[in-house]
Image (spheres, rainbow, N blue to C red):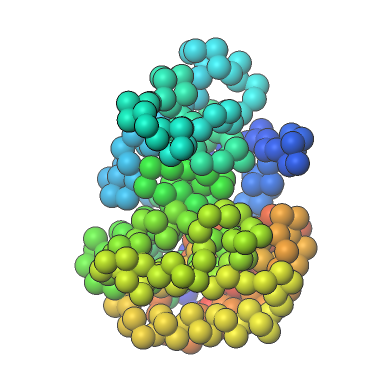
Length: 353
Ligand SMILES: [Zn+2]
């Protein structure tokens, strides 16, 4: 008899709400919404073989193991600072209106953000709104991932962190793509800090995990593999090309698999097989971290691949052939009505249910 799979969840994300983003210049409700996590919970609550677990507080140290202290401090204070300076009256989320780009700073080595706009110096896009509950939600999402790590280290073959906000776009000193802290990367780092020498992250979100790539690009102890929509047409646009293969000790340990539009399950599973062979060659001595995104689904409102619910079960089952324990960390997925079933299909596939 299999023990139930721990699903690490919290209500903290409910206050990361009232979010808007811009679509073709018009403000729209943010696709990254509380309804997503609620839909996943509903699907897993009704399914046999899962137990809900609250995250344990792991403190700030694991966050600062990968992220710039300035990013953390700025995110922690942004909302109160904005209220104090009148930048918001509290009724609207904070979205950047200017960026200190490399081109701006060129020739002006002393350029720096003014106090009221410090937040924007860490943002890399305009689709990642911040409200009063955002920082706590982001910290609790990290705790959820780390609690999943604890469960797997204690012997669970699979633990699932229902992280919201997601994380894989967040880099050392930047946030964006709905992400503030990199939950999956922090999980991998925690496994290394607990003694693993080789950890692999498999990122199956529709988008390239530019933050995860950045954090481990020159590292020999973490293999990062990502299957995602080709950056020639898809967010985050600047990274995710096949030619990005790591640097220095990380040479060869960053592998991108850009996918064409309407990639279906059969084609996807073929590419996934190539990625899984690389994981096996790397021979991890720690659990596999899966950045589990579901915006590859054929009905996703912001994406263009063509996976069906049954394909996630196949993906899970392919992952299970590695024979590694799995820390699954929730990333994207915006077709809310199907999201719960898709998550369940993947997890059932991994655990062989
Ligand atoms: Zn995504």
